[in-house]
Length: 364
Image 1 (cartoon, helix red, strand yellow):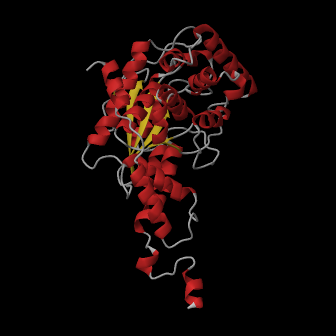
Image 2 (cartoon, one colour):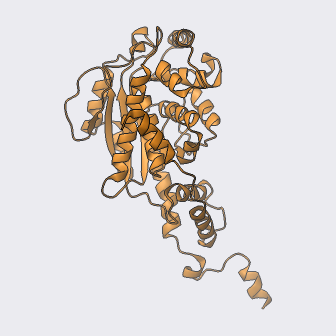
Image 3 (cartoon, rainbow, N blue to C red):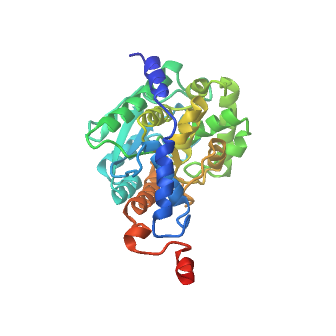
């Protein structure tokens, strides 16, 4: 099957939410020993999860964080406070279990898998490392397209294959979290949001890993140059992705498509993951129903992305690390919502009077 055929078949499998399962969960929420609506967003989450998974009792037992890693040619322009050498170093840290994402994933019982989509150096084999390297980092988007369209599609296909493999594994897949690693990747992410919205680059560009004021002005100028040079077409999401995106962002787009096709909820992390989610929703709007926004990043363009996708973040913790850390934290909230739905007693089971019953008993 060609990449184009794989993509078409995957998108064709992304169906509507299961309305019957959603209604069954709404009814159950009214029967649980609490005032209706008193658990707020947690109740809404369970209805949403039921619609995605097609289960009247949604599950969160099998949780996986997929961290896509790649380097970016634009780092030679000095758009990051850290050198590109940090990308492979941090990938090794993920594999050794020493990064923040590993800590949070262990807390919520999620497996961490790292996928090499384009780290600019060879990585030693590891059981938790998937090798889908498309190239040794993207080209410098300030002077031309970051990727050829075929390269972007290759990375996207890798994401689809990863999601399909995880969903087909023994035990299945209940929640999939998105993560990223790639020094310089806030630059293509800002370029993507500017390309789709037409907003000024300054409006959607933040400090990334900690640029000072001069560094931020330079970063804005580089992104403006990239958009002027490449002229990405917002009506063609693949054009935007290829010209000003990154290998790991393309991989995340495919991961989102593959998970949605398998009816797996996607917990979207921060700025870079949301750039991928934005490409995915602009490309195929029905995929939005399968997304859960984990948190609102400090990166100033993130809220613009979330508003365009009409996604409301679960958390607001001033995070800006990436790696999937916000998604892992959000998984704990999602699991709490599901456990409340599945494990709380109903009024009938607990022998607790429902609203209005006491007044009836007094009158009698």
